[in-house]
Image (cartoon, rainbow, N blue to C red; front, side, top):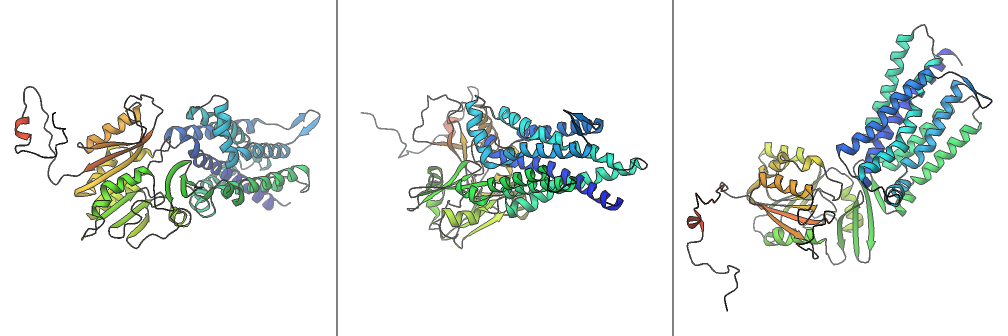
Length: 489
């Protein structure tokens, strides 16, 4: 092999290694959302499980020297191949959706490990830290094949190709592969690339390590195949959601990242919280002479107002595959002409709407999948201020949230505080037939609807005190009927 061909081969090895490491990190972040939720805390653990082992891998790889191990000579080439094969063996279950489902839903609970941060730490330590440590040794090991005369220039080139690989792993895998071929096929590609690495490095192309890697790549193809995913009910699996469809009698359920998102049945029935929102905010305006502007943040399966052909609906969501999935598997029908779907991020859409002076008569917020899947940027005061700014005077806002009905845990309390800091005169309805005011179990989470109507004037900030009490001015001055108080007997 001439020097140019060998140089290109070595840089290709470095580039592929950089791609696989970053792609695996992002795939781990994306796929674990289904089991441990989303948030900066879980993401930070995964990033740490990549960065530190990568640093230790660089350090160990630079110190490695060829030597005899158990009577066999371990050369740099053999060390590289051994690292890749072992890393592949560990990554194979760790990146496969079928095994991950077993790991988080069965194995961890059976071992008594139920806290999500502990679960992701165990997962990251086993299935990310170890293979990344092995792959991180690639650059210093490969550097032994370059001339030492131009060390600084070669070091710069190796870091360049490694960074380019990482860039491609970060951008190409998430913005091209995951949206168009799916997360599971993006996983398979990583194992094909690792197999190519071994084939590039090994001298005898028909040796045992090559066949092992080819076998592992075939197993990866099977575990992440469309047939296996469909067997689990997965109908689309992109960078945002793993969408499953489950049919139960007449009911068709859509699950997003393991959370029950939407339901529609043969008779047009929906989840109770959707029917509640329709009864309160849509039924009174179904026959409006002037169509109302309705904004739905978090499209789900587009069941809200599906039968309404009068008012104008704008559904927004970041998952571009939701419409096709909903129409094909849940609604069994196309969206009506009075409904549009925009693939946009909620806060960006609201910011643009405010700049354009666009307001809505009814805003329905259903972007929280429940449990641990809470978009952190959609629970802040600043976000709810954006929502309020886009409400027309007299407009209605309803939000569905999975929360403690009795404020038995911090999230429910803080969320309530946050909402009332922006929308002070807010209603709260627990949508659960089994609701008990005496149940203080913090693990009990149900659908809670927050309801707010934007006043046409300024909202009162009056507070009654013993010192200043103006209730006699504010109470009804005329005889009222229908007060709701039962007559005395």
